[in-house]
Amino acid sequence: MAKYFKKHPTFIGVRYDFRLKLWEAYLPDSSPLKSYGLFEYELQAVLTYDNYARHLKLPVNFEYEVFPLPTPVRRRSEDEMFEERPKSQYRGVYYSHGGWATYYYNPQGKQLYLGTYDTEECAARAVDRAAIRYEGRNTKNLNFTYGDAVLYPPEPRKRTNAAPYGKYIYLKQDLNLYQVSVYGKYLGIYKLLEDAITVRDAYCRERGIPTTY
Image (cartoon, rainbow, N blue to C red):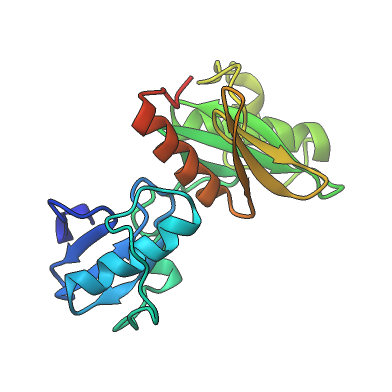
């Protein structure tokens, strides 16, 4: 997918789509892809990115604001927006910052974080073991067989002390919002985890602060 795009050599948050022959405004380093539309001219994409980045307190290309904002020629579909993110073939397994995060919904509907693993298969077995523990050996919600889940030795997690939502990001359960705080510096509360990650990454990148455990 990446071969169809070329990042702008000067401007932040802008890339050229060779297939569509259009300029796209997007949030760099966001996962899944956060796109703000495709435009005929690069300056339109730059100004659109700046508008959203300004609200997220991210670096911008120009200090001045422009109203009204340019109208995109088209917007990416939801499938296109998620296309660049690696997808797992296994139930309850999701790609997250170089590893495979695992989540399981117990019979009461509560989401449980099971850890992050180096491979999809290790993560999938962790989900299977949780399903067996909560649903019993006859559960149909398995990625592999019952015997494989039980007999295969549990693998070590990739990040044993890692927070489930990423370093410096915390879930405020009473509000169901994500708070970003880096070494005591409060960077805001966000509805979407992707926005929290984007703000965290931009702040840490400017200051040389590692975001991995």
